[in-house]
Image 1 (cartoon, rainbow, N blue to C red):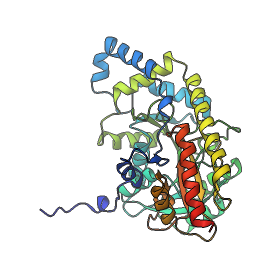
Image 2 (cartoon, rainbow, N blue to C red):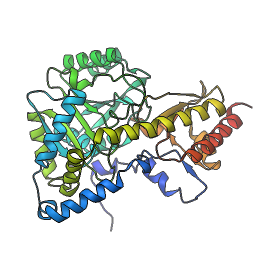
Image 3 (spheres, rainbow, N blue to C red):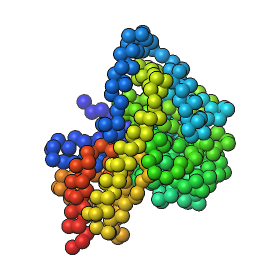
Image 4 (cartoon, rainbow, N blue to C red):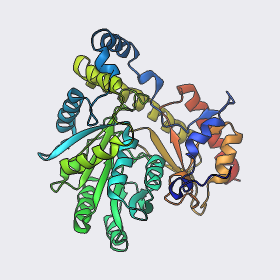
Length: 398
């Protein structure tokens, strides 16, 4: 039978990162391609104890249908924590529990964009967000990302030239894939530009609690006095990625629409894991646990950067993140496509993610590539960086 798939699904391509995992069957291949939390960051014993308590004392609640908005105690705990940590909650805001941050992105696109509308993104940006926008029939337009964020003036010009732009998608803190953070000055200017054009901002902040160096920068949401910022984060990087528990904080009118949209997708986020997240927040020391994770990533980042400094030729530049999970590398000036280098890395048995994966137009070449340091072991980081550095020397230092 010839299947007639919808135009929306025809435009979607498999995630290059997920597809890359399928090729990592060779145990000698070291993967810098993932975006997973460090395996040693999971509080396994505590989660096992709390899970047993839920099944012993609250099994019916954990196994029954629940409210779309989310488990009430967790919503309250998330709201209180985000207000205290990031100042993101306004008087007219509400909180929605979602099935991972990616669902929050998709729900926002669903309620704000019609077929053919535009979401303006940093370029490069998170591939999961790009696919979420495409699945809703929205187009994406990129604004070049610099080490301190996008240029507000370029954003202003882009919005002026794009009357059907309905949303701006940003990862201003420990960007994926670049590991950079938008400066406070630019955050204020971006907010002013969005307000000028009447376009909402989706602030994706999954890595905000993972700062291991430097000073915190206020979130866009905390600077917003007009209700134009939708704020999203999750427990994926601070507790467990497999739980798929995230949250969105936004104006009550926005949350009400997102709730209706969510009802047609999954009715509600997994209630057992919502209860488990809440119990961990209530009965364990989440701040101490996050401090442990910060220590793990500070060590891994320092190790990878020191190995890059030691081995990588000077013609390859790279970011020096103060938090998050990623380092962004750039090939020498004049090289516009990294595909041959990515193949050389694979030939040296290291997987890295090509920068084109993160472009609004994935056919557009990129001279950048992403490294992840959270998943590989120390030994793998040392060996893997030696291998990709050798590939760079062989290709660019002849």
